[in-house]
Length: 222
Image (cartoon, rainbow, N blue to C red; front, side):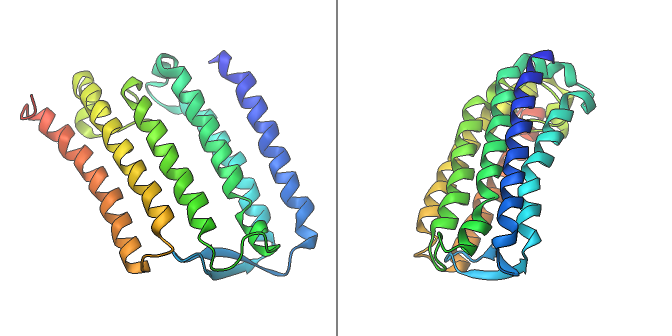
């Protein structure tokens, strides 16, 4: 996929600059930095300051993995049929994780106050928006083993694949809206309520996609 090389080169430069930014900040960080927050936005986990640099390296690792997918997937040639979506997803993932990687520094330097729901809004809202965006484009994904809603029945049958991706797109949009709402309400809801809601949304959505694909396989869904 030659058309992807300039894009991946640009994103690799961005990820490298992102990592260098973390390394520049490293000497100015305290020995212990926040690495985990509860659903109320309160810091409940700490780690050594090099954790910030590790988070900074994560986007580059994700980019390398995404770049390798068309070459390691048995149906990698199909990536050319949804190249725009693949490139858009790669850009979205890279930018999101570059953004997420700075939460530790922003908290350590006091830009995100302890107890603020800003962390939840950034992460939950970012993922919710990405789910909605991915759901809109999911019906365009062609059969492959690493991208899209993959079930044993959709991988075995092109017709099942197409129907599963259409339903998966709708489901991802609903899940994305739910994640957006949850990210803004997490500060006012109890941790147990938020966690239960997340499990229902994520497990319920995933379970429904698998069930739908199975029902198509059994020819129950017309």
